[in-house]
Image 1 (spheres, rainbow, N blue to C red):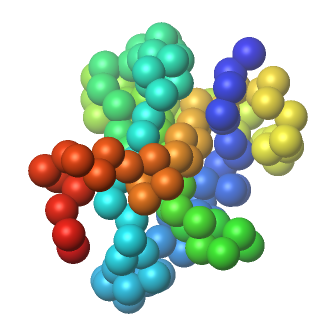
Image 2: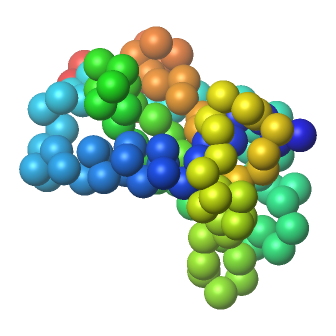
Length: 122
């Protein structure tokens, strides 16, 4: 079973909302990073034909503009590996459908290492 997978329509809505921020980060000025649990990243890497991994940033406008990190496996040709199930109206709450799209949403500031030199004051 694929954990943390989401449907394509959800990923499209979130990434479109992020891109619609008019090129500014005003709504996300506190966003500094995402914590990615190792087991989640390993799940993506184990997918068939994964040569690389790509991360997209998204925003859930129905949840106070909560930022999301959407991870997808990438094949040797540089193409995102999105499974057919992602396009067939899957139910995000199900958790049993592997779409190839993973939502790793542990954004910093909630999961920050405030002692890191990368955290910084601004």
